[in-house]
Amino acid sequence: MVELTLSGKNPRAYAGDALVIGVAQQEGQAVLVGADALPKAARTALAGAVRGLRVTGAVETVHLVPGVPDLEAGVVALVGLGPTAAEGTADPEVLRRATGCAARALAG
Image (cartoon, rainbow, N blue to C red; front, side, top):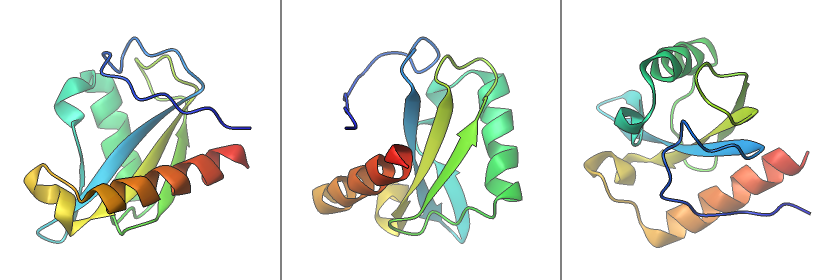
């Protein structure tokens, strides 16, 4: 069974199995939501993963990225939030569905 925890902790110090990060669509590009809270090495690695995996930020898409530098979590799940998250907010239903998608992807 997957256990989810919502946390406001610094993502660098989060030592859980997985860290879930939202990906929004902004002007045709995938944008990591809250990326400024991540260490520079993690931002760089995740930006490369977004390009390499062709992450679009489309709603209900999930990409798993293992071994991200400077993060304690074993894997980062990049979950699509669509265009609504680009302005810094997302519809609660979009977030609920994104959480479910991430949980299913992480459960195997």
